[in-house]
Length: 154
Image (cartoon, rainbow, N blue to C red):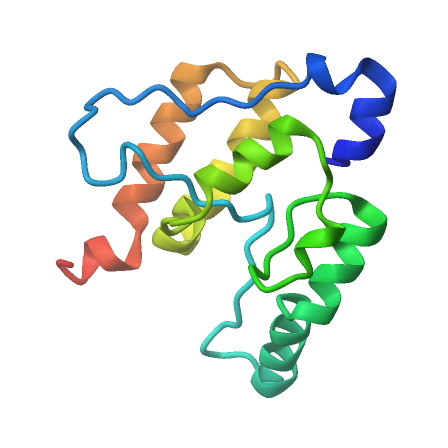
């Protein structure tokens, strides 16, 4: 999200930020937030260009690229060491900085390949009205059953 553009379009006072409601407020991750962008990157074990992939991710998450993202995209950087003077001044964006000060893992890195695929495809199909939430839940359960970690008894 470009906090500067949204602030100019509808006013900083009209931008908000909130935590997801916690079903169990005492759960270990209930008061945490990942703070990671909407994309999660990784390199597969079977990649033929593993080193190039790791170098790309290192560059993408690096300080220099983070500062470019903040300067021109006005969004949440992946790197916590960016120059704080570059960060958007939106009060809502500043609230997010408080929430992500002690982040947790993004759920995407805790899922198996089949689960990640079902999650990514499902939310898009639900959003487009091509799939019901109930059917999506069934697909997620099927993906869990196909998960390599499930098969290995982990």
